[in-house]
Length: 448
Ligand SMILES: *Cc1c(COP(=O)(O)O)cnc(C)c1O
Image (cartoon, rainbow, N blue to C red; front, side, top):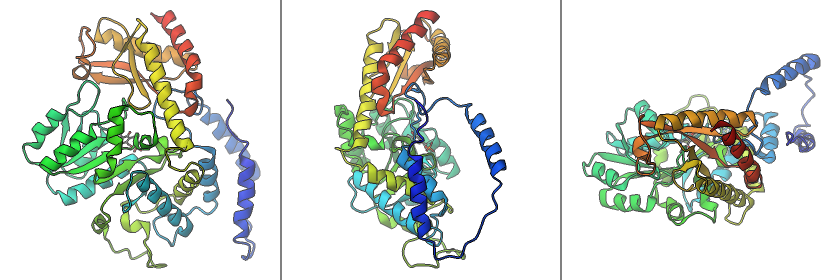
């Protein structure tokens, strides 16, 4: 599959249309060194060849999904203006588009009121959620599962909030008994529920965590950076469906449009259910906010300058792919999940492999069968490399003995086991499954 360039002609046309909006200004010519541009751009293209083919369906490794053409075009178009969504003074149109897009995401989670904005990514978004949580429950603990993103531990440190990690069950979900044991001590301020873990796509048991919330009273944050859009998918299993059905009950949500929302990097989103948390952001800026009494996004965001282009890209994408259960975005997510389930079933029924648990979203974890943990780790890495030489790009992930112990009866000579991991995030993965399997099969035959 070649890189998509067909749509570039539309960019030219849209740029002309944009330019007409400014044609009352006197001309100001820019001195362009075309030959220098050309030389350097070809050098850049040469350097950029040193990448895995993230855009191709045979890239089935890490959490990487190419931005849709509409997002790329809208982002590029916006660069001719280069708006800054910190203040309306820097980006009127793109700030309005951001408010509209963010409200659309809040609506997807069933929220009629909210406070929220885009930010650099899931890390910044989670930091704001934990920062607000720390203001509301000051001095109390943040807890998240062992399989939660490592950012929560580190961000708690940045925010000087105590952090404790909660063990997981054998499906990489937060263990409820372990959580309740910690809650009983009375010093937990905030529980982070991961709605799709980064390593395995496991969804924490939100309905039970909500029951514990009514019993113990804590703030509940949903880290749906990866999994959030799956609320739209109609082929989730019963447990994941029940969890996503209740996501509207939490206090804050993080979702990354740059993961499953077809956006280029630099697009995370944080949402609060109670708009009054805006009070924590209060500050006086001597430089900005002059042009209007309307809300400037910098008044409710920790980051100051932000790419308005991100908001333009997201807005355009949501025009093309509305966030509805019947929409094309939902169909794409379902297709990835079907591919993950089908790959899991193939691997599970093959004697040469070990599987852990069925995928809850679109991530599959497995390993080559061997007697010892150390041997499995070595072979996983060998297969990862051998597959890459055949243009099939997988990923590896390491799991603790405690998580795998109940599942795999092997000699745990090491406390950790490196496994193979595949994120089947592209709608086309389902059509490439036979090919993916063919390469994997060939690699195993040669290597084992
Ligand atoms: C990716 C991810 C993050 C971190 O987000 P970035 O966009 O990489 O900064 C946090 N939590 C979860 C569950 C994630 O999958």
